[in-house]
Length: 184
Ligand SMILES: Cc1cc2nc3c(=O)[nH]c(=O)nc-3n(C[C@H](O)[C@H](O)[C@H](O)COP(=O)(O)O)c2cc1C
Image (cartoon, rainbow, N blue to C red):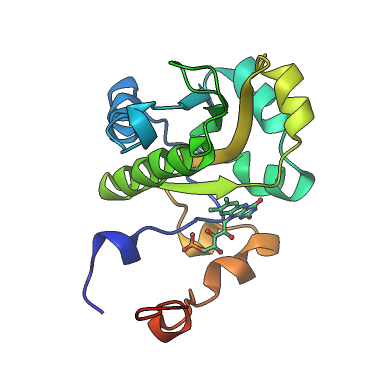
């Protein structure tokens, strides 16, 4: 397949630890998320973030990840936790699309990262309750996913424990497995 935005994006297993993401780059990533579509244009997403040069905050974000994820995500240039506002601003009623919309915003962010020579690796493997406490997430907001962003490390510089996964051929189901003309 030819190079394209979607196949170029991938989840790296290690990042170049010497590469810091600049304030401008970070802003471009957030801008990509900002323009995501959302139900009622609620924009329910929030991002808690820290660069690896903001050591204390970076370590707090790192500490909520599970041990396996900490192993590779410690090399990231920026760590983030995406958080969804659970209720609609207008009515206060639950927003049934809060997670969906937050996922779309993250998807746009990681595609933007890919276009900039960076990559993002999303994680569900983190302690949501710990994140609430450590990162000061208020009631009514739900931690959704953690994200590690940086410049991917060259394959030969990936620690052995992660190299095998990094070398695996990326697989996807064929279209026929998930497309249904007319009815399921
Ligand atoms: C919501 C979500 C949660 C994920 N959780 C983890 C995780 O905890 N640890 C991990 O190493 N990868 C995690 N991943 C990365 C997936 O394993 C990865 O996206 C998938 O294998 C496809 O690979 P690709 O992103 O390189 O295309 C997660 C991805 C998503 C979207």
